[in-house]
Length: 96
Image (tube, rainbow, N blue to C red; front, side, top):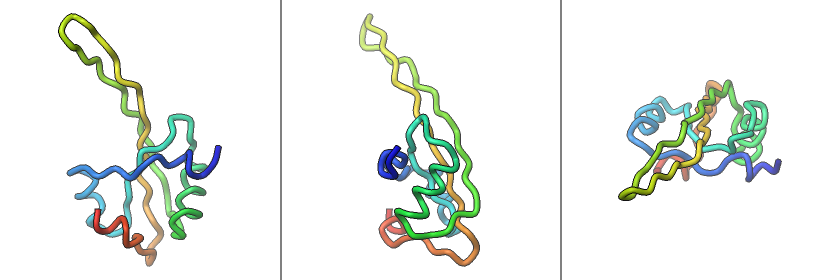
């Protein structure tokens, strides 16, 4: 799996904005099959920052209806990446 396939996009929500205020934690949507080691390597190579630890969680897709038709959103995975002490968030993530 390529590094750019592991990390899909940064998560920008109200909860992740509060978590990011400490200056060390970033949240990403990652590939469902990505491991913590792969997420760590991808963040260290793409962002150039050392990672302290990674927490992952699977968000299960919801059932959605449109009239009488029922569909299901796919499951997805998110990763909370905490940078080492003294490391700084990249500029493009700070403003998001």
